[in-house]
Image 1 (cartoon, rainbow, N blue to C red):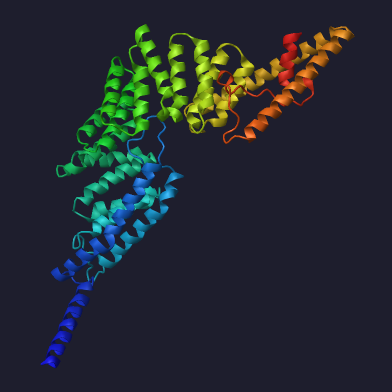
Image 2 (cartoon, rainbow, N blue to C red):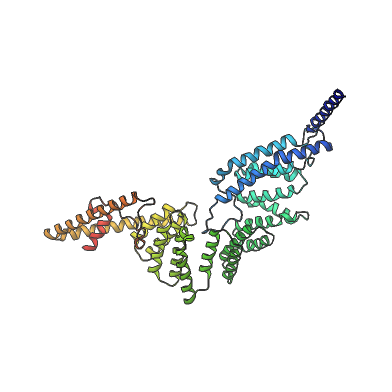
Length: 489
């Protein structure tokens, strides 16, 4: 009896093994085969590809640093540099998706081609594959993948592929290629409602990239109405506020204010909350009473430890408010404080230096203006707005200041030569003493900087004065000593 049971057990195992082996084949389009490949493709392969994609995108978004001096991107796709940080996750997506496609797609026995739709997770794997290439900025490979899905499948992934083709062409700046798919989606009655919000966002991107802000405003307003995620909604409200500012029509400031208030209502991350409050301060109706209130609030923000890393922005905003009231000396001081407080925000530091350079130029203090233009360029990115114009102005100032220094040097030498020997000797001794004092002071500052983590503390009232040249040079070529001498002659 026991022996008979063992035989039955062995036969059962063999039967199950044979059934499983038969189910494993990709060249039979039977319910058993489809069931097996649907289950294994979903849980053994596609699941891990989807999770890796989610991990990579989350890491990209968390590491992203928004530049609030520019129009924020609606979606965060990363840069050429930041995309490298998520290569491991995206490579895992590509590997898992490829396994899913090659091992679990049902194929025609004769043609060896995939039977589209037989295994419902294969189109998902193709989409994950395309998205991974997109985030790696391998755009042409991504386009090929999305185009394949769009032409091969009749599932909702077909429409998602259209969306990602628009997204990819937008990101590449090939807007003439985006437009046909935008029109296709607009005229497709079967386009899924769940993709409607994303389509409106991509349509907004399409208009923003052309500078068509009025059209972008309409589309982004539609996108917000279809968006449920609070974090994403806060971002869209902020960008909509920026668009109203740039649209520059009568009454748009009020509309921008409304959007920044809506951003705050969504309780965004603190950086966005802070920048929304700064925007509201600058856009508020300006009179003596509101000005005093705004300044009080900004000075109060300086004392909050949460705002330590944003002090440069606060001081810059205070400078803007003072300029509005034509308090240029106070504004100048605030801009210098802003520059001195910028420890890691090179964008803000370059903005502060630029404003100081421009104000110095307006006061016809060309040597100081040149020095601050030099500092601006040192911290400004080459792709920043107006970079080429600033370089051009800086080069012109180099020539102008060179001529000014030459004239000053010649005037100084002529005045020095006209002195009697006793007066001349006294004057030269005075200059030498000044050089020695400057060298001693420079040495003390260097020692102080070496003993602190972030360099010497900077006196806020003299923050970031431009350097005047090498103190040890012969005095007629020493800019600082020449200035001292010219003032005394």
